[in-house]
Image (tube, rainbow, N blue to C red; front, top):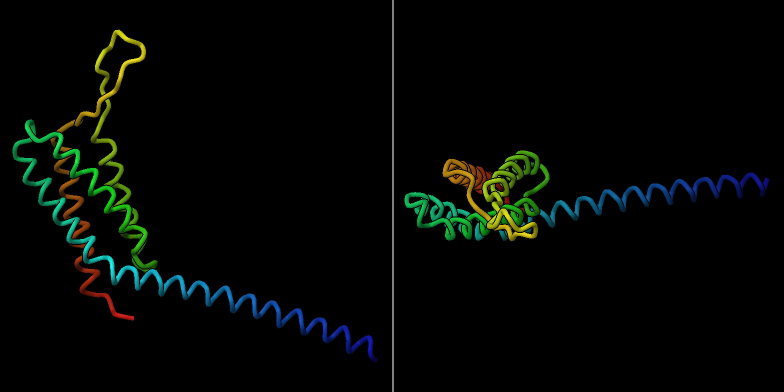
Length: 161
């Protein structure tokens, strides 16, 4: 009788331990979700303002492409950092739609700055970054504008926790 009671107590203790572990896992995920939403609510508007600024600067610099290549490189680099930061702050329920678009935009940004050797004769030549085409810059501008519009819509739709 005591052996049976001990076995049942052990099984009940194991079940309670497993239930506690599952509850702790669920609570931890909910805390992470709330943390991400709070971070999004507090940080998205300054990031969005910066992204709008970079997008506008790229559009303005695009007009005189040949004379503004270095400034364009700088604005593209800044916007890439902002986009990578935005990915980490978007809530999970909207993350998939933004992540694919932002990753495509980052891929375009990386491929736009091609590498061309300065000296073909030397085996150990230095490489310098160049733009592949002016159309790539316009694609980056269009992608940034689309991201800005999506973020604006998400801000309008968001609910405060």
